[in-house]
Length: 280
DNA sequence: AAGGTCTCCTGAGGGC
DNA sequence: TGCCCTCAGGAGACCT
Image 1 (tube, rainbow, N blue to C red):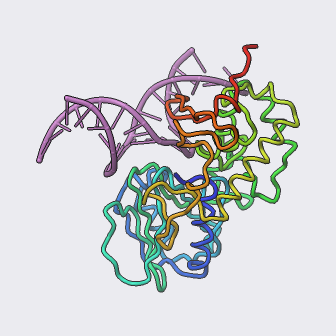
Image 2 (image 1 turned 180 degrees about the vertical axis):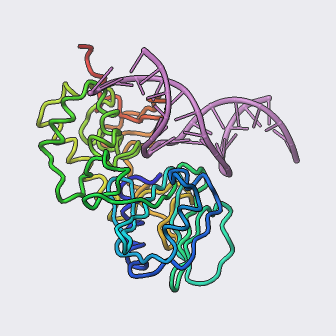
């Protein structure tokens, strides 16, 4: 599941190959993948064809290509999106949704579950207009630990819900939220407002740390759905401490990790290291 | 206003 | 073998 480290791996892979290349032709094989484009695939193709790629940028889990004319191509990988580069002709993937033919390679957006997509839009102050509400992520040089900590502590909901809210801090998904909470020994349902400033700062630092650790080994992957642009998987799944480890011993205290339902998805924690918060 | 829920989607895997 | 059920979850729409 692509969260910040996985998207950053893709960004780095792409920027090494596609900067300076021209988009010679565009093919949309799946209309749903351009659903954010008001004018549909015709507009997407029209605005993109002939443009040159000037840079590849990222904020949180969003990725975008800066074009040579103040427009950007905004992309989100969703649950299963991949950006694949092909230097030589290759058969179309089963879930190939968008094809960009560049100067000497082909960029393919492949997405099984179609939660992801791409669109061409304007940028304002260097940020695609439709993601103005997305907060800075911990890898952003202008990320401000103090103000994020303050904002987190002002929220009246459980801490995990706050970590997943991309308008407060971006880039964190279900996996890294659980990992950061485990490192900080905090229960996922602890009211955010009950964390001390020091605990909140520590939690943010742990989220930053776990994502940087994952980035070092090329991101997390459980299956073949996520791969970087060379088609290689990440290795961080081998380093996870709690996520997906229900029934296995906590690496700190040996207590059996449990899986609980949360927001119609899964949450993993150590029942001993991450005690349920006392009722207020 | 802010918090919480619903919904989109496809394939893997389990039970029988 | 095949059919049906559950599960995976990011984020925008929608409701309270």
